[in-house]
Image 1 (cartoon, rainbow, N blue to C red):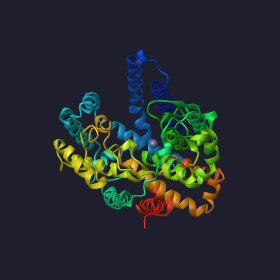
Image 2 (image 1 turned 135 degrees about the vertical axis):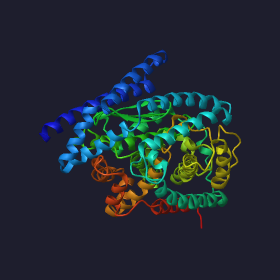
Image 3 (image 1 turned 90 degrees about the vertical axis):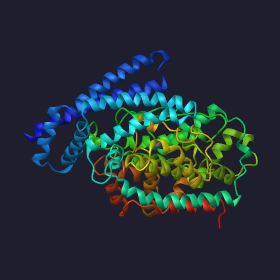
Image 4 (image 1 turned 120 degrees about the vertical axis):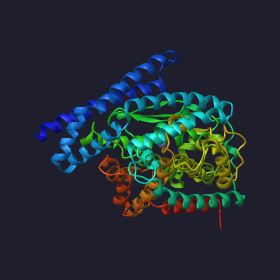
Amino acid sequence: MSTELLQSARARFGEIADVGAAIALMHWDQEVLMPPKAAPGRGRQLATLSAIAHRMATDKQLGEDIRRLSDIGLSGDDAKLIEVAQHDYERATQLPEAFVETLAEEQSKAYQAWMKAREAADFSAFQPHLETIIDLLKRKADYHGFQESPYDALLEDYERGCTASELRPVFATLAERQSELVKRIVDSGNQPDNAWLKGTWDEQQQWDFTLRVLRDIGYDFDAGRQDKSIHPFSTNFGLRDVRVTTRLDLADPFSALTGTIHEGGHALYEQGLPEEAARTPLGQAISLGIHESQSRMWENVIGRSRPFWAHYESAFREMYGAQLNGVSLDDIHRAINTVEPSLVRVEADECTYNLHIFLRFEIEVELIEERLKVADVPEYWNAKMKDYLGLDVPNDRLGCLQDIHWSHASIGYFPTYALGNLYASQFFARILEDHPTLWDDIAAGNFAPLLDWLRTNIHSVGRRMTASELVRHVTGKDLSAEPYLNYLETKYSELYNLS
Ligand code: ZN
């Protein structure tokens, strides 16, 4: 009886995954290949398929089957699968259909308003829409339910089990020490001379180099491909088709490369998810934060390290010849790690990046917990930018209107970027304990020990654990700011000669 029931539930999960893959493929095509006149038709096709996917995921019979399977008391992976499926089913069915429709309508209005408001650098044009979004999200939190803060109910969509009260002290410590570190860097007067970066960097060379590095770090081109898109991203249509995109910038030899390594880190994770759980909720990535830990470890910890560049230095010189005359390995290493406080998050360097996140997190929590009015967001934002990065915000386009997230009602998403940095450092400290010679391997261009470790300890877990359980399981400790701060302070004290 339970075997039959489980088989039928598995078949349904498989169908839901297949429709999801079709949606993802259509999105990929939209960003990479689709001709412009196809946009309205594609919008309809995606809406139809999304409605089908939602219907399948919230089907009453599926819910009944999951409930019965949960009551039977399965064991091992079957029990895990049903636990995860029940969580997803409950989340998906907690919101009344009429509410989901209203939220979608308001989101689309808010997005249109945000684009115009950003163009005009006029927050007041976006303000009423953001007020509506916040009200709806507070209702959403009520539908889902929460223990401490309504913000926790929103976080749950991106980082299951994570709470505002868990993040607040960690982020506060980081904000203080990271802004202190940035101030010391700025005051040191030791900015590298990056004049050699000016000029044009050959497009074909850049493209070939991204492919080479992607292959070297272990990305399987028989189960994926790289293309160009305006915004780099990674996506998958199953374990054996995980794709990445990158964007070439002729004025910057590092932009496409670091973008590729970042998306490659996401893709390596997806290519390494547990095969035995494919096409089920258990075979998915744990959370956005864990996903981001993979991309950021490869991009920042590895791709911006000296051993990495010691390995690729000669290839880099061969590609660009005279453009690198008089440029040393140190110059390359310092250029790719240049710290410069800036107003725009997506252009921020590794050292300042989290500070952009903390201020968004604080604003989101204050809004959802009703301590801040939407009208006061610009003032709050600008004061925090001054406090954290020492910058004056000239207008709202470069300030609180810069990101798309709030217009999409994606509140609770931003913290996952910072969490990715924290998880990455905490995992990496553990990897170095297990592999004391890892940096020698990297300097020799041997990335297999690192990938093997990630495959065994992180990728193959699927959703058998939550993010905090995984961190504890892998490192023996709870999430902490210390490994990341140690990493940043050590790396940048050396690069900037801080005493
Ligand atoms: Zn990412």
